[in-house]
Length: 321
Ligand code: SF4
Image (tube, rainbow, N blue to C red):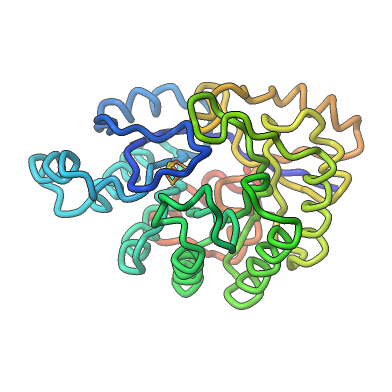
């Protein structure tokens, strides 16, 4: 069986965020926005990566300081700035994957042209205490954005975060909801099963991480109910034994970076490909993919604007050549 991954650079464009999730160690109150030069420094070091993963706090444009900055730089909206960053990544030979929180349909449409894929974690489809100060974590809002991406035929990444106060039934219900969306719209390329990892200084710093058996249970259920061509992704830096999750049905390891840390979980460095390969004991074949999964490459789910790069980087099966 093939297990896929992509080589990326992680670009935390802004940590300013309208939400205050109780487990988050990424969010900042103070000014935190990368300009072109900051992004360029990362792009210049990208080596053989094919993906520029643009990550954001949600709706940073609700901060007065950000609005003012955008105005001074001549951008009408935050998304217009993101488009320019996407174009910059493309000029360095990197395919953008933008993960900007909830976006409106017209914003998704603007970004679609310049992105190989986009993403938004559903997290859980039920209301939880840890999201009580996070208007953007209302499940119906997130679902609407994920469905809008489906209407626009954007190859899309979503997933669940487990261990944040939900029950086993909630987890399964969240996966069933994602599975229904995947079947209805056909745009879900991968579903991440991510385990909560406590961060110092947050309201949930003393919470226990979910156990490996809970991860296995979720991966198994996801594999059972998702359409077979939707990848089940697990984060290799957040679990000690990734092979048991692959044995349970996971077949994707997400983006791995040789030069940038996981800014969301900086205390968990990426394992090297060699280490992952050794842990798979020859039972699985590791294959590099682009941020757009092979099926969507073959079916041509990408715009004219980025076709040149996708076609230069992919083989006839849609994997990275
Ligand atoms: S987890 Fe994401 S949405 Fe929640 S506070 Fe942190 S950056 Fe904002």
